[in-house]
Each structure stands twice: as structure tokens, then as C-alpha cells.
Image 1 (tube, rainbow, N blue to C red):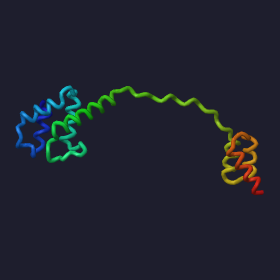
Image 2 (cartoon, helix red, strand yellow):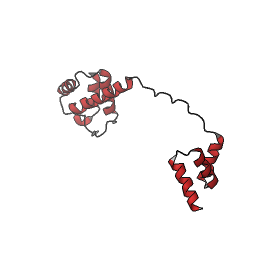
Image 3 (cartoon, one colour):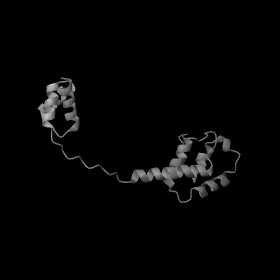
Image 4 (cartoon, rainbow, N blue to C red):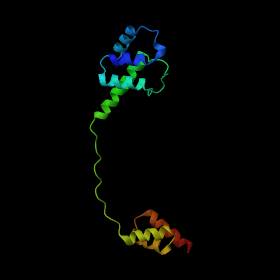
Length: 137
């Protein structure tokens, strides 16, 4: 493959090795991996974008094959159809006066807390806050 030969020529520290044998080792390591994944992996090594790789040396055939498999997995993930979350059903709007009561209660209004406790007697948090306010009186 020309991309592998091109990648190897980009690493001057690998100049002393037999290129034919090195390419054969790479081809053996990447057997069965799609050409697009091989091309992406080679491009990543040439551009210096592969993590934990000493950029002065060509990758070993095992490291190259591992990056090819990573690229193959990334391509498979990109090609999967996306599952869109179901839209949330519309929620009923809160009446303006209830929002005003909540704001007043948050600002310390005792009458607002009592009114909320009357409106929501089953809510333990609101009921406890109203009882607490009554105890402080």
C-alpha cells in the first residue's frame, strides 16, 4: 500500500530498516481492516495526532494496527443511525399567581408560605416550611 510507504518515509529514524519487510509486517498486521481506516490511521501518524507516539520513529506494526482498529471503530460509530430522544410531552403551565406565591415564599413571606401550604397540603416540604413559620410566630 502506498499510504504505508508514504507514512514510513515521513519518519527519518526508520531509514535503516528494510522497507519491503517493514511494509509486509504492516500489511500482515492490518489484514482485514478497511482501506479507509488504514488511510486515516496513517494520516494520524504522519500528522502527529496519535497519542503516546514518539514522533521521531515510525509506529510498530502492532501500534499501527491498533490505530487502524480505532479508526475502524470510529467509522462504524459515525455510520450508525442516531437515535433521537422522544419529545417531552407538553407540561401544563403554572398559573401566574402560583409563581408569584412561590417567589414571595422564597423571599420569606409568611403569608405566601401559609397560602402554599393550603394549596398543596400533601406536599411535605411546603407543609413543613409553613409549620416552621407558624412555630416562629
